[in-house]
Image (cartoon, rainbow, N blue to C red):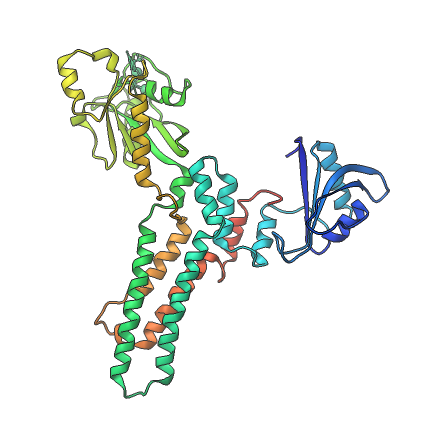
Length: 427
Ligand SMILES: Nc1nc2c(ncn2[C@@H]2O[C@H](COP(=O)(O)OP(=O)(O)OP(=O)(O)O)[C@@H](O)[C@H]2O)c(=O)[nH]1
Ligand SMILES: [K+]
Ligand SMILES: [Mg+2]
């Protein structure tokens, strides 16, 4: 968005060549940057710009594509846009239209487009790596390989159905058994992919909830983590009522940290009671729990980090030291003691929730399609279906259709609108 050092205007479609010629007076050599004095239809100079010409179909969108690298001032970009808009057949792109054209022209598939959308939205290193993997076709290649195997299995079933001697039941059984084992093997692989964490975890951030009794030092801790005065800190028990959230990246992993109301059984007033309910709900939904209370009072949670907080206060107190021995770590947000190990603890736990490096993660939509394919591939051995080649062939076809939805080559209009709406203009 102007003003910027340069403003890139892209023109895509059958009129792109004519538009570039009209502005620059010529079509430059394809794929070579050159300098041109751009003029509007009346010959008024617009800008001295770097121009590029990419003839289709081997372009990002699949169409003819012209790029104008303008000086990035608002008025320069506006004048060039006005000159372009005055040309017949040209109009401004809608959000995501370039990527949509690339999809429609078969330059990228749906999984790659989704990766691209995530890549543009990526704010942390792990989001970038994950999105780049999807944009460059990790998921698409896996799907293509599964489709190949399905096709092989289908061919086996079809051949048997077409050519087998009706009376030769024995051969039919052997073919069916081979099919079922091939289907089961594939279902197992799809299951492994489904067992991985979803891509949304990386995109939206893991939730880390700070909870504990009143005055445990929860708000002081979130302020120390965020390095700003996010939540009110006071010696009054029951200061925090709302859930206070902030997004922080730890070692490139996006996390949503929440400070919550101190949990106690008898609360002073109705508003605090609501706060406590919210705190309990936050704890329940947390990926990681930072518990700042007595370790034996920690709520039931799959991933708690038990913290003995305010260490500078109780150092040397025998009973407190004994309690702290049952915690995972000793911390003082006031002095900074233990903050580094807390950081390490959280990141280590977060990594167990994230895809391993190099593993592609799937978005919810893709997981649903994969789960459906898997379901079609699971046939109970010994069932009536297990010996019916026609039913097995139909299951293979349904599994393939479900996989098609991941790359978006089958009946996907709604999905497309939803996806391409996430892009901004000119992408
Ligand atoms: N000495 C010391 N004091 C601390 C530390 N952390 C918090 N405090 C003090 O403890 C009191 C309560 O801190 P808060 O951060 O408000 O505690 P809280 O758990 O958010 O309290 P509620 O929101 O009321 O549940 C304040 O007076 C803080 O200054 C610490 O590490 N060392
Ligand atoms: K307090
Ligand atoms: Mg608080």
